[in-house]
Image (cartoon, rainbow, N blue to C red; front, side, top):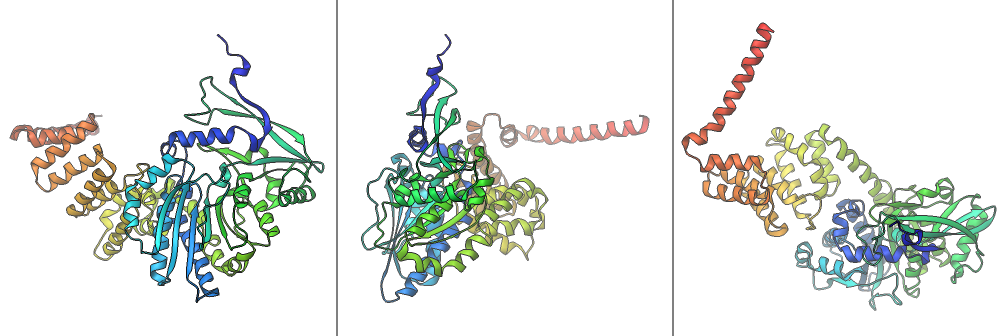
Length: 543
């Protein structure tokens, strides 16, 4: 039977912020949990050690300035992270923030409130080994709480009484509710969107993937004076009509504005936003329509940092931000009571986030991903340090570092070992990307520190679970230690997981076999080499 056209339809054209797209996207993350990030959705851009350290330093500078303004008053802050996802950024932020507080000896009462709308995601973070260990480092006046909270649909904020809120929206506002507009000869048009799917069995309540949704747009003229209930948003629309060229399209981050409206404007608050987006009206004019939305495991829109800036200006607040086009930018907003503090950290912001920030680090990181085979030992170590000892950054350069181990000497070895120790301390247990425990174990084994290597291999198995490659490496390690029984045991465990591991099979045959079976493989290899040399000689002599 041929499906009817309507069988493929999800919904007819309607205002983008009213579309089913947002519910479908939320259902996807709620259904998949952390598996969403283990599959299609990339997250290194927003969850690496470098960017977490940038945020931690910016928040620390805000707190320092608040202390300088009122040195006699006790400091109490609530750092609220929206849409925590994997929890990886949260872990790194808290780790670096605690180090800054310890070094400064600044006494701060703070609560880090890690939020997500999905109970499944919050449960995964609460049970995470890395967070369990991190909580042991907290002082009596420091707390971490994981809270199921849907900031998109909430009717009130979760700011604790007596705490100044610092809100972190790290790669969140781009994939929640947006409105999209088109300006045509001074007339504002709402861009409406109809949704269809590419296959019949698409389940909007529990989608397995989002890539099969198709969009069809249409324009409807609207009145900018009455479009939103909030007159401040209408003022932004009217400003765009007056300043933007005909044909320009832009988005309004409705979900972000709905959240901001929950905040209490009678106390200072700070909003730290990191996202891919646009900061200037001329950037929107140069942007093609198809570039406003992208698909990377989920649908996201270029965040309109400019609209957020205009909104806070109408609140009497302050704004500092980077001016990158399309790429990842960091922006700090404060309401009228936070204006002086935001202004006071402007130089710090430029030094921390603008001169060499997350965007610049990612550019270098991408270069190393494709070209690290040509970098020298010192450059490899310096890159790991630049990343703030990021375990995934180490994973990128691990193979090249192993190739460079013959260059390790008494002079550079202490620096390299110290770097590896820092990488180990930054491992966040997630079960994606690299098994850094195993990779570090290989490093230590090859430089001759078998005890440290065994410790790391065992950590990999105890924390991440049984692994064929790790059991294989333990087999090699115990072969080097001349512990035949243990080596046999680990190679057998490796083969239980990876049946086609021919190297483990050969090693087991050597370890288990008689004298003759133990030497047959080396002899066969030697015979093969002699045969190849003989053939080459004959070819040169008589060919």
